Image 1 (tube, rainbow, N blue to C red):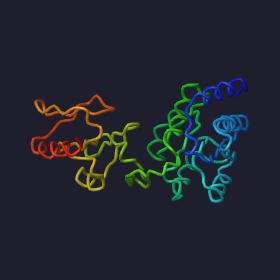
Image 2: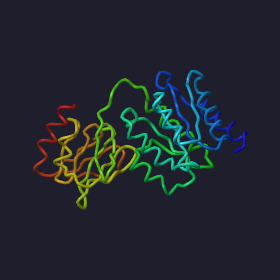
Image 3: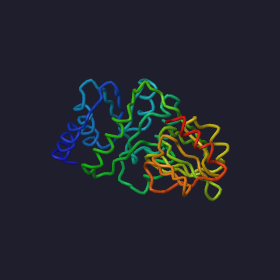
Image 4: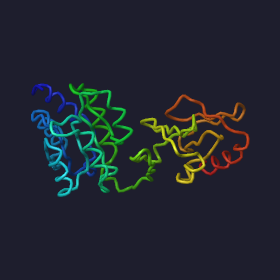
Length: 259
């Protein structure tokens, strides 16, 4: 990857708004030295107080996670000695990193969906990178607020030997469909089995209400309630959500609480 390319990335990052109190230490796991150093230079150009560690080996990366506490990871999905994907799963198994942002560096777009579902990574960068990909990926981490002290309510969903960690305030609605639940968030859609709406709503905050036998919605994303046609409009989706007759009164009461 040429130096001119990295100069362009640095120029992009300089244009981003950085909240300096949110980031402290980042680990880059990349076995191509020029890419790793280029990424480190980009990060350090955002703020010279950020600490960046680099390794090209999965085993060494795991050692680093025990010595230091990292606030974000950039991981090549195809390391020479190990799968970056499997490394990320191991990192997720460490309690303090269950919600730490991970950005995958990958040349295999077909594995992106697997990454989001199994690792709950925050974004990915496809090699060779485009300017738009770099901007979007770093904005995701920067805006996430790595050291934000305002703790979010997290939802842990066990599924087939691994767990989804979902921020409840990012869930727009949940649909029961074909004996599965389809969770639509502001960033992704997740299919899970082994759960019912009744079971799930017990784990959700008071921001959620069942509006139909097949739907739960987040009240904070409601933009319109059409009582004539028994439909709800939500942000982040063009799909109108139906209102069941027996749920009308509860829905009306919940909306009144938020007005």
